[in-house]
Length: 197
Image (cartoon, rainbow, N blue to C red; front, side):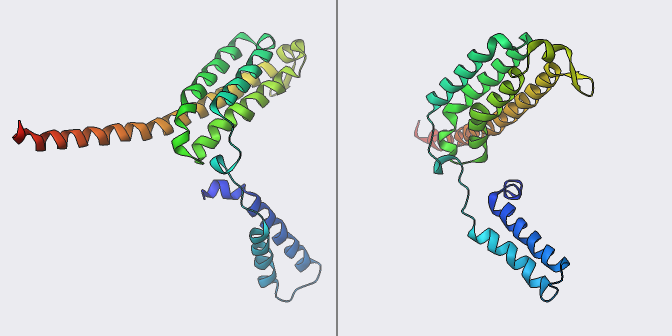
């Protein structure tokens, strides 16, 4: 499992929590064998926590259901979003739409999981948080570092767009490698076949 994913996994969080309980016991006076108790509690937490599942092991939502959900979300928020935000949202939606048919061969990979989460959670949640605010407040009232909610929304959409571009590059690089491998195969096959022409 990827180290980054493991650090945020339920197994690590439960193990760390139990290890902290062991450390607390040490500070309240249970000093004997603390060096065994703390790692032991961590291991117990990791062992008893069920494995998290991604992608193919969870109930799969079809590509069409993902598209329909995302389209419904975007259409319901369209009138409340600034024009610049709509352009970014449409770009993100287009990237998601391009990648969805390519996810099946990737199974439960991190890339497949991230694209689905982008469509079903990250983008809808970002838009929902913005449209929950009255438009005058969102456009005029600074809420952090002098930035309005509108500016913050555009920054968050930039992050999501960059993430989708990185995911697209990652997924398509696999297809590009297959194309190169096919080219090498064809070259090799036709060179061998020249003597038969």
